Length: 381
Image (cartoon, rainbow, N blue to C red; front, top):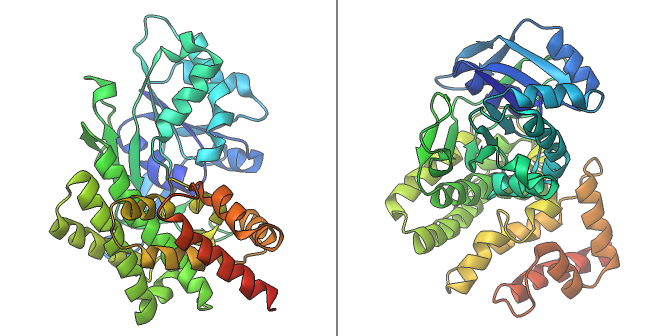
């Protein structure tokens, strides 16, 4: 069996690649970084270190890497003979890997089993997005694959500069996969959870893990705190994050009928993971790309809009949005762009374009107030 994974970064090696290796796949990484591809090909193995209680070390072998920027033909050949294709490249990069997958599908033996394609991204329906990109290029080739959406969860902090290709991760992970698109041909992934309806799982994850993580980062940055674990050690920040997650849990109960007691346990587990002092994770890493995280169906506006539509509380989520607007990191392109736009555009126009909310949406006005307040702060400096 062979799996091709696009994105050989820390998540690719420390989470997806590790589980594919443990499932018995010959592992092929595809990446545009020549230095990373060379480092992977120079190594016979790498180690995934699980940091924190119950953690252990896992050695990964049986892998190689191809440079998709320099040798797209080699990537297409690997995809053509693969059983599984996965990716962890970021939602905005899916359109750039679609041509390589299409090229591989065109070369695929017509008698071969459908190629299993799964996008492992922090976004709702990421595999659907990738499938649409593939179908737009070649619908006939796209039909040679089976596409399953997934919900993935594992904290992979920034790695030390001298760490090589080894990766440090938290012990906990979750990989939930749509069962129905795969029929009986389920991939061999130890610990994966196959479900008929992915929506409750992916929204539970996005609106709890991702909302809580980003809220901690933005509130921590606002308080001048560097590490995620230190931010949650601040009782005031911890209380504000917990309240925001109580609001998202109310949405999950209203929309999906999830049990409030189960959600309370889930929230507690998530916050305990964030407090893991063995994971040296920073508010700058977690807070990066605020424009994406403030978009319509992401971790703040998504659940807050659903809450507002149902008359449920949104104050803590809107407060996290306000903190995100203050996230000013010169090293993050989206942070720089957001601060520039806050100086240059009107509050109403900016609220609409960043969040995707319509002006008549019940959430719009309170979010616009947060944008306006940030602009007033900046004008007074």
